[in-house]
Length: 479
Ligand SMILES: Cc1cc2nc3c(=O)[nH]c(=O)nc-3n(C[C@H](O)[C@H](O)[C@H](O)COP(=O)(O)OP(=O)(O)OC[C@H]3O[C@@H](n4cnc5c(N)ncnc54)[C@H](O)[C@@H]3O)c2cc1C
Ligand SMILES: NC(=O)c1ccc[n+]([C@@H]2O[C@H](COP(=O)([O-])OP(=O)(O)OC[C@H]3O[C@@H](n4cnc5c(N)ncnc54)[C@H](O)[C@@H]3O)[C@@H](O)[C@H]2O)c1
Image (cartoon, rainbow, N blue to C red; front, side):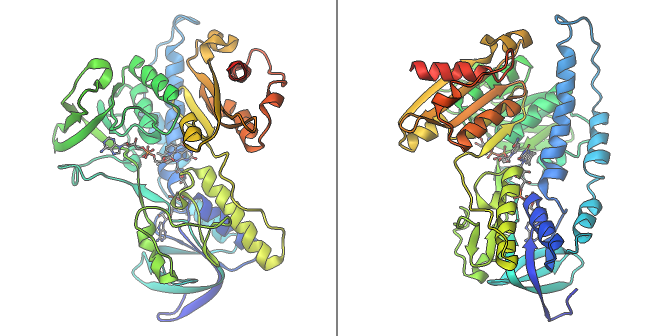
């Protein structure tokens, strides 16, 4: 620890120990560099404590209930009695150690890293000052690099009456000890959709209020439509083109006033102007944390909204890197880890003359929304490809028409988006049971720019879900 008023010189300072920050700091420390990792909350960031892992644990449990409810008609009788306390215990004990990061912190310090708990800000191009959580201050100068991995916080929109209520964001929802009787979900993006379905499967009456015309608006419209149909079939109310205008909370729960866009029909014709529920989950996007970093002290101009530009090695300036959600290339753990690998390779390459690990590529970013059916996607949607001026050809197939889909009574689809000039796929979606796994071959095709003509000659095992890819390609080649 630095003496008050002094600056300690180390090789690398990592500010924010999310998935990417933890990975880059750990790898560099293990390689023998002196590394300070600065974290204000929990080492590991959002994903292990309030994001991917506990949400997927809740989804796994909800899916088990849904699968058990499919037994009548397929295999006999099943008495399904949901018990949320089991998933709450699993999240508390197995996933998060009761939201304690001691194991993750030790993993880093065992590699030789120094963990400083506090909020870091830049005080120069490679200078970081930390307002420590214990009230002290520490300053560091980095010989090789400063890596910024600050992530995001849940955004809470400025809706009258909302502030100061006991609203849930993803953080409170994933610490819940019981499923509420009723839940309003503000936002139909991945967080809203995943948690809406998971709670509904535990018996919560859920209403999703989506401001735009469809759920998961970054995905193909066909995927949104299919998901909305599944949600409504499971008893989840989906209100699209609807905004929450005001919120009130009393001992009985939340009351929200709604406004639907003129000329639109919310929930298949039902118009709703007021809702009440025990809980309100705000899943309306994320807010940037870049403001905490004082980027201007390193000469970086930030407009306060869009992520500042980085080069192919994720550098904002020489030796100053920005990785993870805050870099704006996709708010996914796999992107944060991908960035970490490139940055660690760059720093080790400069210091130990090891081979560089290349620069970022963005044409084949995969994503999976873990609803049931899963929505896997890679690269561009059809609309994005058209907006990019490509000569677009698409193909699609309904999973229910495939042998495996029919056996499984599955809902889903495969859609492929081709740049007809190059004859390669630039995007694809795999919606269905294990859609995220089926996606893998499509992600490879987009990543490696495999010619569609080559994909069409592949032998697809029968009767698999991924065999539907062949039908989507056949549809594309017919157009
Ligand atoms: C409910 C939910 C489900 C998700 N599910 C998935 C999924 O299934 N798959 C997937 O790929 N992604 C998922 N995500 C997204 C995923 O969690 C993030 O993309 C991932 O955490 C990577 O973020 P990051 O590395 O940018 O930083 P974060 O995980 O946000 O961590 C950043 C860290 O930096 C710290 N910090 C910030 N500023 C400072 C500062 N100035 N000084 C010190 N410390 C600071 C923060 O305390 C935090 O710990 C999900 C997110 C949510 C909310
Ligand atoms: N499986 C996964 O990989 C996964 C899961 C969850 C989250 N994530 C990541 O986390 C990010 C954040 O997720 P998210 O769902 O919060 O954000 P999002 O930005 O994707 O979706 C938020 C939605 O809320 C809507 N909205 C905003 N304000 C609203 C309001 N006042 N009323 C009603 N609707 C409103 C927006 O129109 C948008 O559709 C995602 O972009 C994703 O990258 C990934």
